[in-house]
Length: 587
Image (cartoon, rainbow, N blue to C red; front, side):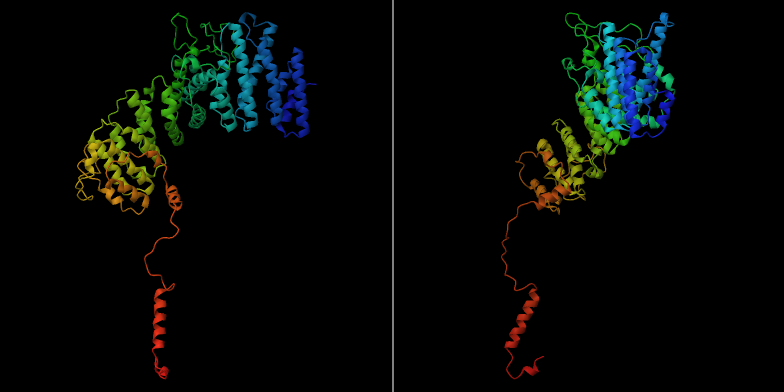
């Protein structure tokens, strides 16, 4: 017997017992069999949809899987295909429209379950939705006679993930590892749809994007700051897992919804709308490029790597428009040079973002260095103030920041060119030497080999070793000057290294004495010094092997308190010298 909707709603408002849950699950199986066997029991779909909102996760789990089996079979048979307008008044068309409405309700509920607080329901809901994407795509491809991707449903999934306020680690890992990071078509459409969702939330949709404009009219104005912050967090959490991208058309070989026809581009599906929204069905893929071989045969756009790079670029640009938090800002700068710039068709689109970050100061400027330097050296970005601002980054705070080791490894690359002016190199050497006087030992052991390598690389600066300045009073170097070409560094000397030879830390003093020797030793490997801290320096000291007994050329002591022992010996000598019979006169 079918459970009525009233009874189902009553059960969902109270806490079910274990027996009631078991009975409800058994009833779900019965309802599923009845719907599958006969269309006279289609009203049971209403009950199953209502049970997807039950208070018990077990009931929800059973109901949503039962509906998946029912609806996937209907999709495969074409029973949910939207009827033509001419047959809208037909009884069969009425049933089809009724089924479609309940299918849409089911899809909406599955997208809501992605935001359910329990990960045990989030992951099965995602699997069901992704399987339905495959089922719909297969049906549409058969109907159209060519490749088709059910992007209308997938767009709903992407939107639900970006707006998920309960994004669990299990849900994130499931989507990124099994779907987004593995299948080329799922990655392509996620990037494409995510850019649209973010642009709609920001109110920055383009005039030519009809689908985004329609969604914008529904949503209204710009989303709230809380929603934008949530969208940023989820979008970045997914995007940062993308550690690699295809580098050639031949590497596009993993497809969730079937391999596009490699022999030629066929027409997209033009039959009746099978999408599940009031808008027109999204096309299979925008024809961003028309790549043709020597024989004149067009490639399917999904098989062209440039299309994937373009949607990747559009998605990241949309993410960068969101109001960044400090944490996400730094994480983005950490990966921009390895995971973003190499996969952009036009990396100069990040020019404003990186220059603004470089001008921000502090740790943000340090993190923006690598990406900006890549744009300058590999993509012809003209930024004449690069070394000027780099020089200004050397301050006392630099020696205490978290990214100090990363910064010095990058500066070593920036100053490696022999074409840089000697005056500029000398300015950096003096700036670092002066900072070493007030830096912690862990920072000084980075600066000393760094300066040594610079002197080996730029022999013109060797005159700093033999300069006449012996202290800050008679030093011509102006440490207050921000322009490295005007600070008179080349006319100075490295008296700071002489000072560091008397440092209290033995590691520092020993390392600084390298400047007293001839420059015949090879350059230092900076990687050996970048990770030093107080803890590592202390560990190195206590783990050193020392001799068991030290050689001492001194007289052995007569006791623990030498003065007391000597006084006792003098008293004994006086007692021996007393003449017998005169003891009473001893004081």
